[in-house]
Image (tube, rainbow, N blue to C red):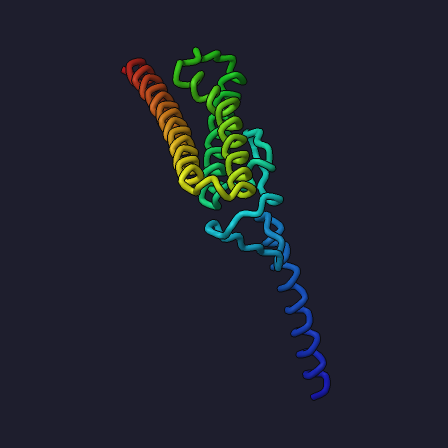
Length: 185
């Protein structure tokens, strides 16, 4: 009887040990570390220290006065710029030099020059408003509205450019398919 209990205990420990090793091996194979799941709420307020920019070069000091939704929007813009830059690098890797359109030039100018200037102006205006009580909140509200319109404009231009890239890639695929189909007959 004691032999059966001993065999049962050894079997249970072995199954538990191998199961745990298998569980860890499965997670390692798919690139997940067991027990280290960190949930990040996309709608949670952003911390300036945790924001890392992929493409945009923005002064963090000027971002302090922005609303949380504007920080989220800047992150979306940064991700879209990153997608666009990755596409451009892929074209360069294929030794294709695309002509730069006016839309691309204007967007580049807005992202590299105008956006940082607008953020700096907004920051200075909001710090002046906080130190000088005689300046009314009307100017701050107008500045916030103007900044929001600029961010919306930039994001809209990026969306349009990314959509244009998608259409171009789809058109290239159609041309290749038609070429292959024409040579099959």
